[in-house]
Amino acid sequence: MGVKRVFVDRQAGQVIRIELGPHVNPKMSVEHLFSQSMLEIFVMRVEEGKTKLMVTAPEYLQVTPV
Image 1 (cartoon, helix red, strand yellow):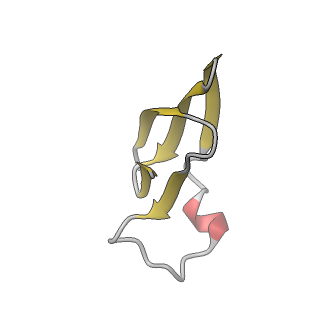
Image 2: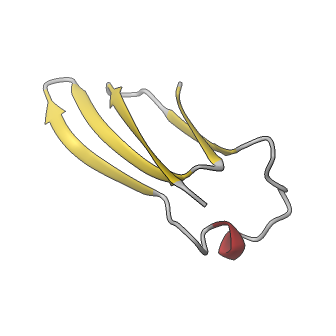
Image 3: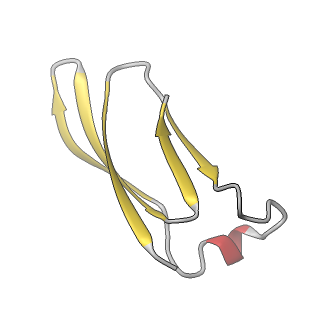
């Protein structure tokens, strides 16, 4: 399984949605989902009113700025 990196700029009150991709069995255990790779959220930069994040996630997770 591969890993992807997503870079996101967020302001106060904004959200990032992390969901299972459509091809993943929703009954799969959390242990199995993260046995090969983990989810990491790294704060890269904080400026006045804005934060830059780097999300590293298994490719079967969808990371969406909302």
